[in-house]
Length: 251
Ligand SMILES: [Zn+2]
Image (cartoon, rainbow, N blue to C red; front, top):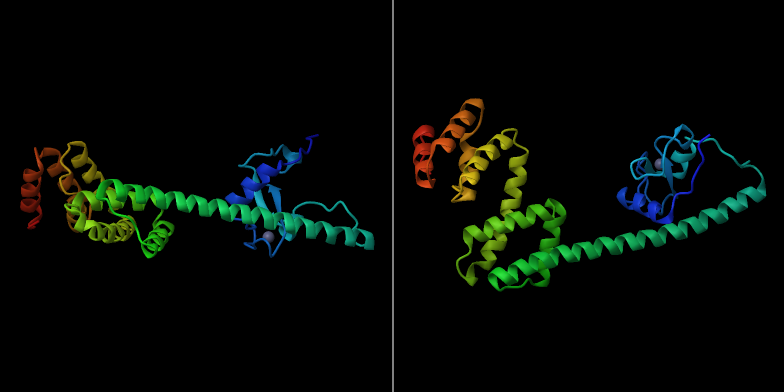
């Protein structure tokens, strides 16, 4: 028989955090419901106390899965259950506060990283509303997307300190553009052509290349044509020439 080992407090917290304090079966959240840790593969079938095997489940979803041990009808049992429920609720409230604090700290760290970039490269800071706006975009697009877009925008638009606002505004536009492009089924093909240019150190104007590829690489045929052009061009100017010639464009 497999032995049921207790799940450590730390592990419980990690599982709750990963699952955002939400029952993964019905979507109810603490503190509306009491949360438990459920084994996906039951202990008696060899399930272990690992992150992969543990999942957040509310009382009713969890109890539906396993046999009840206590006789729920006695008054003593009921009272004891209520007490346990209360202290469990308190405990989980504490964990949630801790989790929210951690998230906030993490958010602050991300904002600081961006601020460092702005200070180092452009010698500018963010206003309070600028910070709020940044947080909003990080939440929506993810930190990496915002950071990468900022780098692209900076390389493209920064010449003097006066351009800082422009760089930041374009950062958000680039985020939104990139998200839009990712939903496009040809996106990975377009990025493939871009990667060829990048590897040949010919990605002279990333924004321009992205928009050229977005306009022109629309099916297998145009994809192959763009790959050929990227492979055979010796430099950026020649790439532009060949591209315009083959796609009858004027970039
Ligand atoms: Zn549930």
